[in-house]
Length: 247
Image (cartoon, rainbow, N blue to C red; front, side):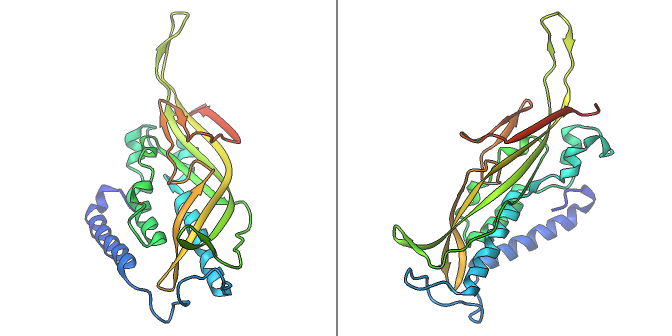
């Protein structure tokens, strides 16, 4: 979604169009010719077509919820960005917004129930998240009963890189010398798993619920405060690197 002022009129028109399309996707019944049959049954094996649909939606979830923020190269190499390393500069650039992510989530789940799951805290620092599958997507042969629901559970390994720009605070050192604030670029990598449970509705498979151990998906509560990365409990980076911008 373009944030440049010069395109503000076009952006408003596009936003309205996206909203209309999103609402249509949520409320519209799928074409009968695309339907793959009645509601799921634990005694009925999944067809190859159903497995392909579930795999495609799993990959779409990872792509949309695991890759967001500002352009990675802009974050990793801010000295080559051609602008001042300020929040104002970064926020004038093109980036993924919470509304973009909510629209994607509505399509994946066929509902607005997960709007509040999108992380609103991440946007207090320029960042990028890059996530990819770290293994194959394995689809079970049959659904399983979980509570009152018949669901297909898929668990996939993920690897993610979080890069962000932050500023340290200036302070007076123990030796009495004043230490200036610094702009710092930090890169951290994570490994974990994503579990998605799919429900079948009107012949289509949708995300019913999900959870992950990665910690930096768009649905995870992480944020940056004064240069410190705050992650969900139990989440830790496997590797990390930080350097002062311009060094």
